[in-house]
Amino acid sequence: MNILAIGAHPDDVEFGCGGTLIKYGTGNLGRNGTHWEADFIIGKWHQLAMHIHWSEDKDEGNTRLWFDGVLVLDKKLKTKGPESIYFCQPGIHRSPHHPSVDTIYFDNFILADTLEEVLKAR
Image 1 (tube, rainbow, N blue to C red):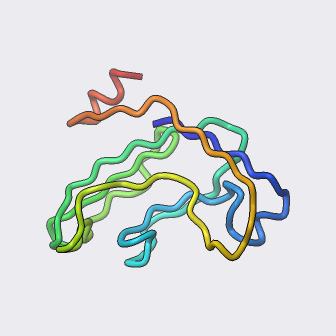
Image 2 (image 1 turned 60 degrees about the vertical axis):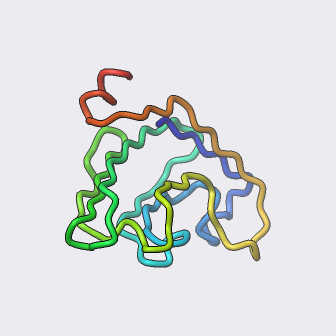
């Protein structure tokens, strides 16, 4: 998937929004922990690839993330709760107490079973 984020206010960094950080968390909007985060340059296209092995067992579940072609996370963790359905929720997520106007574009979503299939489809 390709991602482009544009923040409306230069001081959005103070609130942790405006497309300045990219994070991967588990649970409802990361409430079960943030497992990776990095600076996110706005106004530039980025590539993000995910491989998630869904499991309620932290020793069986696994998440692998590639950001701009670099493996940034390869971790065994609980990727699903017993009441949850399987899903990923990319987007701009923030506290509703900090109003802002932001835009994020997604392009070139690819569903595949292997990393090789993703790389071949580019």
